[in-house]
Structure formats: C-alpha cells, structure tokens
Length: 333
Image (spheres, helix red, strand yellow):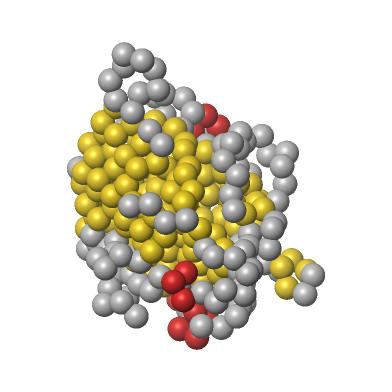
C-alpha cells in the first residue's frame, strides 16, 4: 500500500483475469459554467496485457457541445511519485500532467480532506463482491494550473483555461466488471454552504442472472461533518433517472434523508462508450456542469436546502442505446 493510501490495482493484475481501473478528476469553475473531466483508465481483457487510455472532456455552457477526445496506449506504468502514467501523462495525489489529442493539462491538486471510501466495510474491498470498488482520494479538491486546447482551425490561437481557484474531486474505481446500471453524483460549490460537498454512487448489479435493486453508497459533508449515505439493505432509496434529469431520495445515518434534483442541459452532456473486460459495453452520459438542489431532512433540526447552478457532476451508465445522447466516436477496450 502506498503512503497516500491509494493502491493502483492494474500493476498486480493476473494475466488470466480481466479488469478495469479508472483514476479521474473533475474540476469546476466557481462562477462560470466551465468544467473539466479527465480520466486515466486501464482496460484488460482476460489473457491479455492491460492497456491505458486518456480521456479529456471540457464543458463550456456558452459554447455548445463539450470538447471530447480519447487516446489509447500500451505505455502504462505506476510512476514513482504518482498513481498512474499513460504515454507520459501522469496523475498522482498532488498533480496531473498530460496530453490527449489537441488537449494538454498541467494541474496542481490540493486535498484538504481525507479520502472517502464509499463501501462501508474494509473487507468489501478485498472480497469478490461487489465487483466494482470505488473511493475518492480527494472528495473535495482544489485545483490550479492550466488546460490548453489547440485550435483545429488554421490561424486560430489555442485556448488556455486558467484553473486557479477551481474546485472538484479526484476519484478511483476498479473491478472485474462495471455495474449493470449506475449513477455517480458529485456536488460542490453550493451557494449557501461553500464548504459542503456530496459524493455518492448508486448501482444495480447482475447476480446469478438477475439485476438487483438500486444500492447507494457515499457521503454528504455538511458544516465539516460527514454523513454516510445509503448502504446495503438500507430502506427508502428512490431513484428516477434519465440522461438529462434525476430525482433521488437517499436514506442516511441517524435518520437523515437526502433528496436530490439534478438537471443536465442536453447540449452539455458528454456521451462515451465504456467497455467491460468480458466484451460487453455501456453507454455513459456525463454532465460535469449540472445543476443540483439538495434538501436535507434530519430528525433533530429543520430541513435545509442547498443549491448549485453548475457545480454538480452527474453520470448515468446504461445498456440502452435509445437515450438520445450523442456518443463520442472513440471505442473502448
């Protein structure tokens, strides 16, 4: 185990097995509808060596559809000062450097809060089930540095975006297969509570040929205190989801109930294809500048509502293809 507590899994993956792993960051501007989502991923089919991919998505609500690009390489390793390196692009606890097509980035990362481990028991990270494991090494991160997007039109200057003062998170997940259907929701930069954040994953999985009900795992941080959300067997979880909208009611510890309303403008949704090691695939819709309204109900105090106009990341992974989201022309695997 590394001193920072994050352990890249791909380096020790047996050749005969299949797996995937993803290190990712999302950053959002405090006052403008601008967002950045970068993934460093590993995909390994059974009996094959792992390959690495870089994914870069930049959201600008004033410019229409997000910028998307992906590149894949056999150059994959664990660097001495980081978690993952793909074709010279690195990500670690304090920095992210790299390039992907016309995009390049050099970012500093500050993590003032400790890691969030979504699964409630340590043994669940070692057991075969659940097949997807996830943590957030930095559930509330601060960023600096720049993103540069080279112009694809002759004579036009590249666009450089200054990320100083942006906030967001850094995440890590891995497993033998993706959930059958999932939602990932991260919220930060709430108007009335700047220090609050939400990080929750909700999934349905295939077990013995059947799909389970939704299960949520995550936390809400409010006034410096973390409130665990969901958990296996927790009653009262309600989910109504489409790529553009989501309504959630999530039970938490000590009688807390969180209600969430997410809205993603259709022109600000990035569509990707995620491959499973066994050859299957999901379509994924992600909007990292979504609006989010939370209502927090607690037995011991009045209800509170928190809102952010563009500070949420909302991701829906699904099997269907008739969702209306344009999928980027980059096959996974």
